[in-house]
Length: 116
Image (cartoon, rainbow, N blue to C red; front, side, top):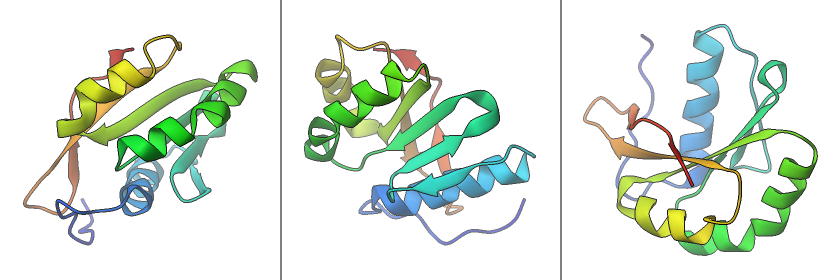
């Protein structure tokens, strides 16, 4: 696997979104980063939203609702330390959540997705 820039404990959602996009591309799935923190997977009808802070997630609820209303599957990725709070924030939405752990290799390690 190709080496990527390090993902440190203070990585931004935009940095992790770029890595997520590259990992999807390596697997052969077309993906595009839009609005810094949103990774669109058109063939899968999916959007992966990478948030590094709960405030950013909270401020994106309207956008998340619009994505769901368009029939897209939505996955929210957050640092593992924010996973519980993220569940509380989107409990009323049909969204999956996935935490990430920042590894020594510079590539985030993702836990298994959970339904909100």
